[in-house]
Image 1 (cartoon, each protein chain N blue to C red):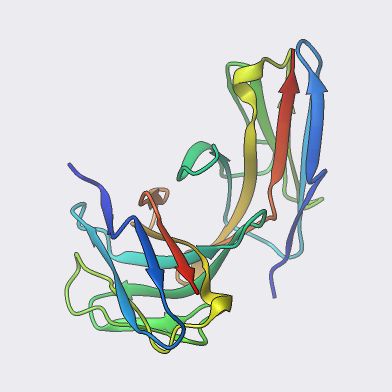
Image 2 (tube, helix red, strand yellow):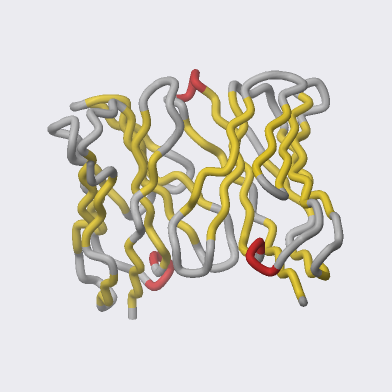
Amino acid sequence: ELKVEQNPLFLSMQEGKNYTIYCNYSTTSDRLYWYRQDPGKSLESLFVLLSNGAVKQEGRLMASLDTKARLSTLHITAAVHDLSATYFCAVLRETSGSRLTFGEGTQLTVNP
Amino acid sequence: NAGVTQTPKFRILKIGQSMTLQCTQDMNHNYMYWYRQDPGMGLKLIYYSVGAGITDKGEVPNGYNVSRSTTEDFPLRLELAAPSQTSVYFCASATGRVGYTFGSGTRLTVV
């Protein structure tokens, strides 16, 4: 059974600081996704990582994937209040109907 | 394109009542999914479908049923609602290589 674990689950940080969210998964996967969710809203796709060593960046967020370690990271650079949200990683396995298995989410609060 | 449309957006059910959550997509995606999200948690897969006429159970299927008679529609049926089914329900669709498109969600409360 595929398990996806994120840490930390809660993160409170000051504006301007850097931090990393970690996503570990238990078996091989075909793709790894990062999503953002604002309170009461649906999920917004941030990144899809397809292969070992993949790195993608958008603004203050950068995601990377190490398939050998079964680890993905979401790095936040110089955080701003607008980044406050819950961030989910999710692992896709095409052999199982392209099902996504989600981590529990990291609730990020950026304080002024 | 509307993407993935879910109805209703909110619903309050009494224990033992039944209802159907509707999900429609207009992108001709083969794959469709139902997830539930409990407060402060990630999404858990209830049922999924890889094409019309084909459905399968996910992680938490008990208390739910689905059907997929067309490519566009994937309704989720709750029979004999229980308080444990209070949750936010998300429908999603995907092709084999394109990422998921999520609906806006249905917030269900069972009292």
